[in-house]
Image (cartoon, rainbow, N blue to C red; front, side):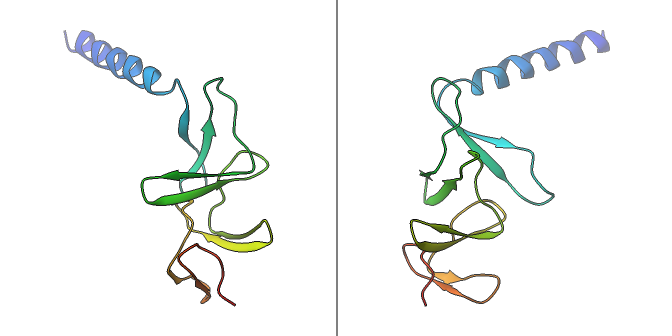
Length: 109
């Protein structure tokens, strides 16, 4: 009986998560420890590349490989932005290496 319950619960979870994986949106992929790395898949399940995406109050940038930037500076259209370990663009703050970024996320020189 316990095995039946385990299999049933596993099946239900698998079905629920398979429905969540379809359609357009952000999908987390495996990244280094303590990071969140994302891709954005369109309705055709193709990665979006070289573009900005906003979710809630956070901005993310998808590079040429379709993966979000994380724990790094990135030059985008001639401006410098910093992305944290959750792939969020920092703004209105000081970056971990001591630089200031404005409300638009651009490095304030």
